[in-house]
Length: 139
Image (cartoon, rainbow, N blue to C red; front, side, top):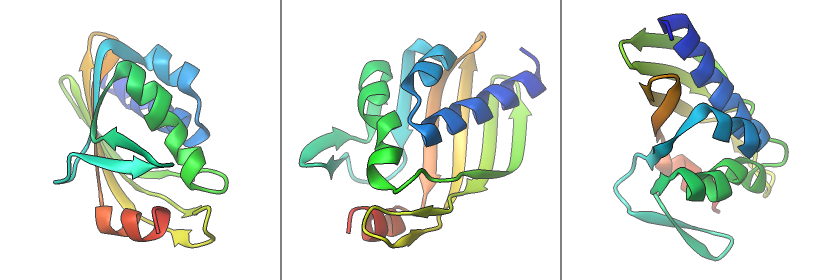
């Protein structure tokens, strides 16, 4: 894959997450995929279940991808402002423009860091204002 194809795949994965589309997400990631929610705590609670901030492929497809739809009224409405690709890496900077299930506005800033192995994404790290996430989405 060239740099533009990697950037397009990264955007496609992000949009699949926004839609809660685990099938498309699964097609884009490797069997040894790792997702990391980049914060100091090791886990968070969602719907009474403890979820790790570091997930392998299957738990991420089961819990991580659907989380967007479970926490918002109709998705995050992610926008991407900048995409940078070098070698096996893509970094994207963007924002969410969502309404949480509790009615609060959720507008956060993000950096998503993707690593590729061949044609598949093998790692996704998500950086955001985690306090804002806790205050708005987890109330």
